[in-house]
Image 1: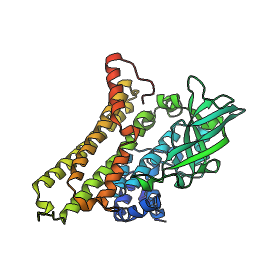
Image 2: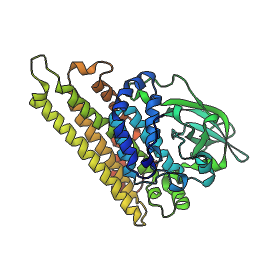
Image 3: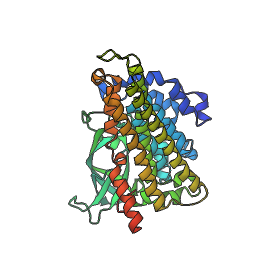
Image 4: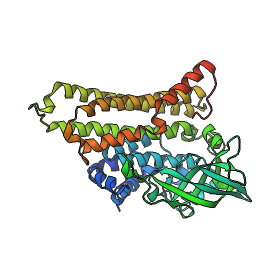
Length: 400
């Protein structure tokens, strides 16, 4: 295990400092993580020792209750050195925020012995839950459970069903919280193009009992009801699920983007083209590099300002409005889309040697394009939702 530094307990900057100290190790462990389809134990130890998974956890549960940009900076720093690890920190690391707005009994079951358990998801409502005395019997199979082999708990999406297992109409979507003993991680269920080291395997179960206190309405979760009831006056928890989760995905993506720029620069530093031109003196490649780096850094700055604006707004006692939510999503997804486009231009000039399996540029390229497929990075829905709201004043159904 990597030793936990003393200042991890005193400063929200400590998680970022620990990652920077172990940046070289994270880079060295990346290829092995990809090959085994799971981040290495050494990588997991560094993430745990940094304390970053506690940044969004409430102080009364042993966490930092930090400014969300402290958390997103940590995610970006991890991802620029090891994309799969960064993706895990974004997805798994945002769950303590959600658990902090759940009821006391759920929180104590997860964190009663300390703030270190990791919690997986996915939220997609693939499960079917039948009502029984005291709770629900949950069945289903869920793909994309990021980092699940290292997690002790999971939050799963599902729909309440009738006695025949058919989802009710209209849909009643819930979040179900379960300990590791209640579900199975499906072996060899993560065979993918990129982000291979995330180990985002399938999980499954059949007729597992979930008590009422660990079942939450998705509508109330997204609408902020639990935060208002359970964490009134605590700024961090009024940020809204539909902002925090997409922002965590963006942070994971920005880490990949920043790392890709670095790897490209290192790649061309010693590259000579077939025509004898040294890449580091080629005006076209230097221009592409400068544009990409500028776009990435500008997008990160834009992203951080969006987060800070909403945080400042709720710190003054205001609720997040529908307009803010839709504008946040519009600008958040635009920031990632703009940067991905800039990196595509850069990748096209990286040369044939960079497409070889295991080459850092090739790995970052695959990881980036897998990250781009996540629903929180797909721009059309966010743009359309914002446009519809502008002209109708109505919040689209299903919109964060």
